[in-house]
Length: 137
Image 1 (cartoon, helix red, strand yellow):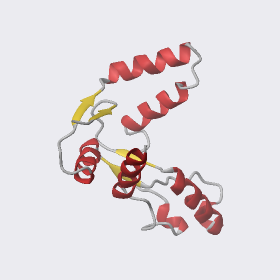
Image 2 (cartoon, helix red, strand yellow):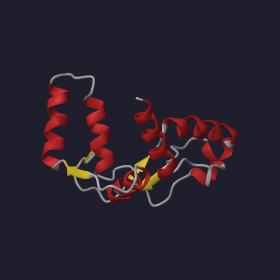
Image 3 (tube, one colour):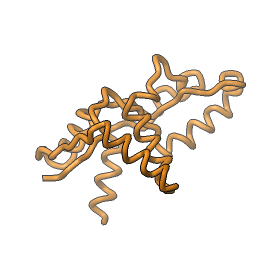
Image 4 (cartoon, one colour):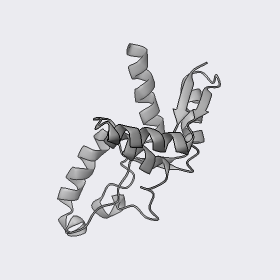
């Protein structure tokens, strides 16, 4: 059984893939009137932890995965410790906590304002890439 860990029970997480960052940057530059003097709220997709698990299970033959939810207190303690130790991983801990807490979820995203709605990567495509990479070793 394969194991997957989540940073506590978050309702949804928004994902912005590195590939989408580049494409969204180009889209913003091509739509200066929409992007001028504003922070754009963009993402690749939004998914719940259960949707992520279901997609991994689907793409790996349907076998159930063992899912572990890391308690929020443990997440906070790890983040605090990383900052106290001046660990290079501290920023990553903070970002993962913000994402898990829903800190990047917005009522509306700006993908459409810059001509990118419908061009985003999907949960399915990201899981496929991760599975293929793991299979290659």
